[in-house]
Image (cartoon, rainbow, N blue to C red; front, side, top):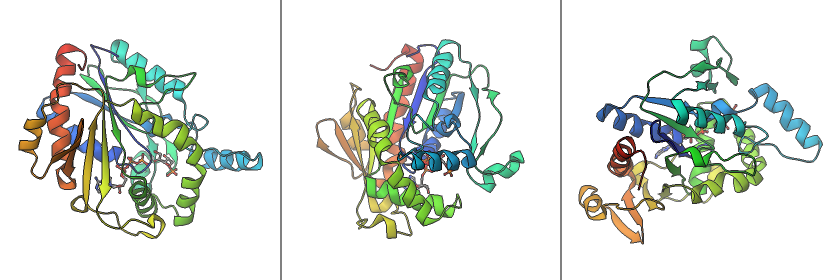
Length: 289
Ligand SMILES: Nc1ncnc2c1ncn2[C@@H]1O[C@H](COP(=O)(O)OP(=O)(O)OP(=O)(O)O)[C@@H](O)[C@H]1O
Ligand SMILES: O=C(CO)[C@H](O)[C@H](O)COP(=O)(O)O
């Protein structure tokens, strides 16, 4: 935790929508005149795509699996140190993992490689991380403890797989078979390193489709916001003004203790109405109560 240099993390599996959520946060930061450093979790992968292909093959020969969800393919130590450094004095180094030609060409690099490490901008008000491991905690590394506001982005798993399949095939040049294989290969790490994070979050946003997603592996389109609801669970934040949220968000309702449901189309609005006061509190008081 850091009063002076707060860290906000949106954590979620591959395809969950953590990058998409950055838009709502970028909007909030702009409205509140907050200077933020945006960091992508994929920067902390250990391997380039060709190196990862080799690591996957070697692990397979040894009868093991390696995936982007676990510590073999991601440097949790580096991520923890990065958060610690930022929390201490607002410094840190970042790089980008380039998934597609669109992302790689401006750097004159190939997809599946990294940009060089560089210093983050000096003098930022906060760090915003979106990625796989913002709330990870293992016996060796506790990333979660450095985060001041931790948000879980967790679509129902069929929807998550559809979002991953469609995005990875349409934007990242992977075959349907390769994406399916990576989902299967990642399952142990998913259970051990991804899902436990959602018990450490302040708030989880869970998108639930209202259309049939029973065979995610045959889907070719992503259910739209209007074809979904979002279940918002408040875990470790107090003083949430539910009457205000219910008034402001048309079609919202309370489904259980500390759980608000909003129409999918209202997800960004809900995120802003809920998170903006928390961010203000974080910057003024140095913590979320
Ligand atoms: N709320 C949403 N409604 C509709 N589509 C969405 C929503 N959130 C994400 N998507 C779509 O799902 C796909 C994956 O989203 P996104 O790229 O944000 O995931 P991610 O969590 O950042 O994944 P990765 O960590 O693998 O980069 C994208 O095609 C995105 O447009
Ligand atoms: O988004 C991901 C994890 O968050 C990808 O699975 C990971 O970055 C590897 O990408 P690629 O398979 O395109 O090389």
